[in-house]
Image 1 (cartoon, rainbow over the protein chains, first blue to last red):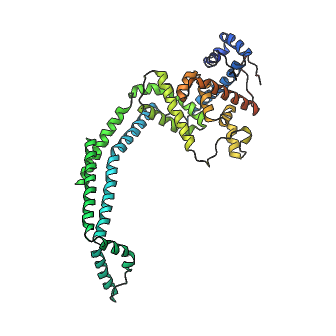
Image 2: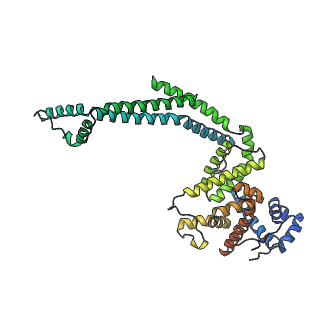
Image 3: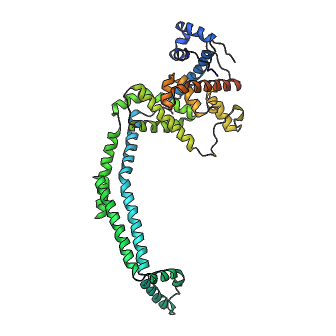
Length: 186
Length: 201
């Protein structure tokens, strides 16, 4: 399909925008548009849209409307840029903080598994105390902690070594990462 | 002690970051003021008409200027900068349409599908004929038509602003124009004919 087009489309739009269309100097382009289907449509569309643009400009003149001052836009842009820079600067800190929480939780869990026999003994003593008439009954620990009981004696010699190695590796990784963050910040 | 050290470090890095942010703008305040005075009305009109909401236009305009200031521009030519600003605004408008929840009513696709509740009817009544037709057009059609006929932009300028190939603009614009005029006629809206032109419908 051949696209209907006319070389003078832009000229029609420009004539309408500049006001030349309605003046005596616009007579020639008006005569052309009267016989050119493309330019006739362009003129109709352009007139509608330019009228709409005038309406938009009129809306801005109303007292309750109006554009913000350039100073305000500049200030807001500066504030947004500052906020973005702060966020970027704080990103590694947040990451290190989260990593520290994860390492801490892992260490606590490891410690719990490693020392489970002692914890169980302590809980047992607590339960014995609770069975005395002056203490309220405590929940049964063995049903909840039973799997730890089974886990802890399973590797009697390996657990401390394994935990030590894992903790040392995690600590080393953390320190390397922290050093990298400090170096990057500098 | 540790916490105090971290706070001071953070404060220092924030200060450095803020200074860096100010340096990140590619123009100074005075140059920006001139640029803003030359473009703000045009940009607001464009956004308010393609979005169909002055409030949204306000929000997107601020964000457009912020992104423009932070952009890495390849030229200081005024036409290039204006096209770049309009491109940013267009992309923000498209992001907004993409993010719009599915349950939010979109603009009616056809004049006969306009909902008839009182508030909508009142709102539609307040809008101009073309304002209503804009609501029935696709976002890209609105963008093309506004830039071509309200702004008087050339096909190359439209291509730069909308991120299209210049060769595609002619065809897309032709289709959008035909559709807009058809909708105006179909909804039996009076199109005052410019002097010397007969309406060919």
